[in-house]
Image 1 (tube, helix red, strand yellow):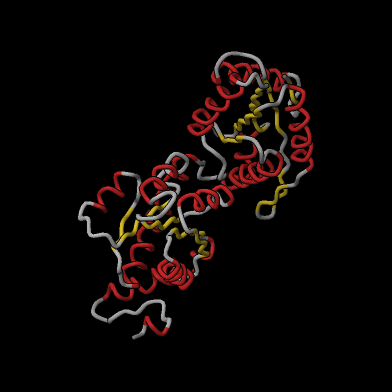
Image 2 (cartoon, helix red, strand yellow):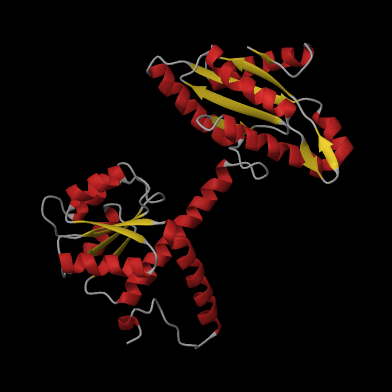
Length: 322
C-alpha cells in the first residue's frame, strides 16, 4: 500500500539494522542524482515501470526499445553506470547486447542487470556468463528491484574507491608511481605505433628539506598539495603523478620537447610567484625540471629526464633543461 502511494521504501522496526538500512538508503538517495541508467525493453509497459522505479530513487533513467538503440545511447552517454535489459527483444536480444557492451565496459565500470519473464531456469546463469552482474525474473516486486539496484551500485562504488586508492597518491590526489608507469607505458607504445611524439618531464621542488625543517611536515604537506593543485590546472590533459617525496612526473603524449617546455614554463613561473599560506607563515617555493623526448622505454626516458633535472639543480635551480 505504501509503495503504491509512491513511497520510496519502508521499514518495519524489527531490529537495529532497520535504522542502519534507513541511513544507508538516505545516503544512497543523495548520491543517485549523479547516476545515469538505461532501461532496454521492447515492452512499453515494462520499460515505463522500470524507468519510474529508477526515477523514484533519483536516478536519471533513459530508455531504449532494443539492443541496437541501446548501443547508440551508450555511445552518446558513455557515463551511464547502470544498464537494465530484457532478454527477448527484436533486432538484438539481451544476451547479444550484454556481450557487445562488455567489449567496451568491464563489470567494474558498468552494472548490467538482466530481466526476463521466460521460465527457463538457467536463464539467470546464461546472463551472468554473458557478462551481466545480476538477474531479475519478471514479475518482480518494487522492493526486490530497488534492493538489487542499490546493492549493485554500492558494489560498483566500492570497487571505484578501491581502484582510486590503488592508483592515486593519498596526500595530493595525483596519480601515484604505479599508475604512472602502467598507464605511461601503454601511452608510449601507442605513440610509437602511430609515430607520434612523446615527452616525459621530471620535476623536483627546490630546497624542500628546508621547508620541512622550518615549517614542519604539515607545512611541507601543504606545499605539496598546492603544487598538485597547480599541476591539475596546467596539465589536465596529461598524466601527472607524484613519484617520490617532492618529485613529480608528467607524461606529454603527442608533444615534442619544445611543446612540452611551452606548457611547463608557465607552471614554473606561476609556482615561483605563488605564496603558500600555512598557519601564520607565507611560504615560497620553486621547482627544477628535466624534460626528455628521445630514448627507449619509459624507464630510460625518465632516467634521461632525471639527468637533465640534476643539471637544472647544478645550474642554479628554478629552471627547465631538456
